[in-house]
Image (cartoon, rainbow, N blue to C red):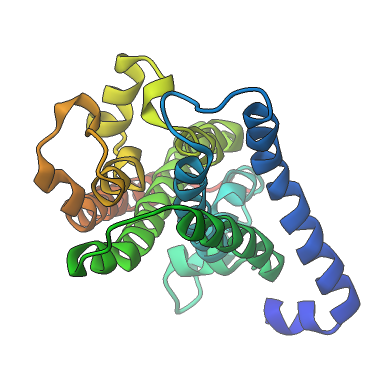
Length: 254
């Protein structure tokens, strides 16, 4: 329904999609400005960081497109309109994710694809069958991990009622963090996004295998192939949190 509504005004859709593309491109423009003054950032060259940025941008863009509307759940909890979704014969999670589905978010995905294409073109990677297989695995697993973070953040809003900015700190904030190499962050931060909120498995760790760089925290080499397992674990935990939050919902009484 929302896609049909959006496509009813094609010029508006084209402009908003381009606007989404342009706004997200400013993040990479900031990286380009840094490299106008330095040759490397944390020991990583511009094409290597473009590779990180592109992987993160596509993964997060797919998750944001599919389930980014979850951040508005707190508003529905506060005004009681979540009740409408509970009486419909469809999963509440799917309804919340589809609410005001924004096709313009394809602009973020397109921008990530362009930067990733540049990184792959500029890098001299010794491609092997495992590395080629790891590329789509990274994108799908990364998108699933970000989806899990969106759902877990939405589950928290059942308790906090209005905590979209807290959720954004882990979703949009996490995506911004992954645009830069782990070498520029403190070891405590790297441990946190590896073992607590495992965003490092979106791009940092598998990218180190593709680029043949040292792994952060001296992780074993097999960690590069762990993103699918991490994604499954994150989605399972997010599902538990969502069901617990949904059971705790008591409406507004109005």
